[in-house]
Amino acid sequence: LYYYGFRFFSKELGRWLNRDPLEENGGVNLYSSFNNNPIDYYDLYGKWATRASKYLFFGWFSLGLLDETHESITEKAFEMSKKSLIGIIGDDAKTYIRNQIIKGNRKQDFKYTSIDHRHYLTGSKINSGARSDSGFEYGLYLIEEKRNFDFFIKRADIAKSIRWQGFHCEKALESLGLLSHSWQDYYGHGLGPRRLAAPYGEYNVRDTDVLFYNPYNRKLQPASWSLLGGKEHPGFGQEPVKYGSPVSFNYKIRVQQSKNFTSKQYKLYIEKWSYECRCYINTRFSLFWRFMRFLKDRTVARFL
Image (tube, rainbow, N blue to C red; front, side, top):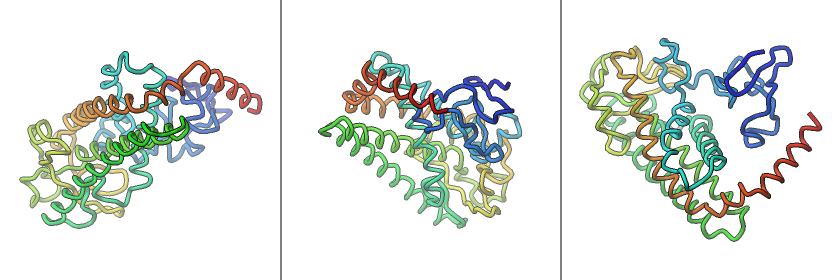
């Protein structure tokens, strides 16, 4: 047996021995491991499978810190922010919120990979005009996605049934997940503004460029990217700048600032969400609802 922190894995059976901690929120098959594709996916904790190429800061790979993905940074940022939710919502609700945000965060990569400005990228162009345009579109996108979040929680507040309220509440959390991915990409893909004409590998960003600026008052510039490689963002799964080293590219500071900024935003968004979606949360995690889910689990387990 292999222990992954939350579940045990059986090599002989090729699946988890324990049920999915997310229950049916993680899929109908509660014992499936690595999306049935252990070549392309890994699972550090027995919680969810992640594509092996989806490292937020690829430089950490050489240091052996394999847990710094978009998902792990999102989870850690949520853990930092949830202290402000004490007394507002219960632990079950916090787990549900976190999982929905992570789901939206993943969607930014898997569904919107080709929309470069969402990832703070210019595409294949390397010039000041392309960087300026991409940065402008990135800023507009952040505003647009925030409007989506506000729209969904307003719709949730006036929904006439718990079912429709739940739909809009989940869509709002998806928007927050999409936003958080783009916030993290600013810290992962941004280039130093004073060295745009320098050869590859000389984008040494100063600490102050990262510490005192964020996705909304941007100083770092978008990087170029091509699926085939050869650009500043060298290819699929390698981030963020070609030949950038963990020392010269401020990896540690970027990761920490990504967590800090995301955490601060979560406090603001989730407090607003928890107020507008309070009826849905109270219903979803009531004793009756838990009992119904227990009966459903017992029924499904008989067929496994």
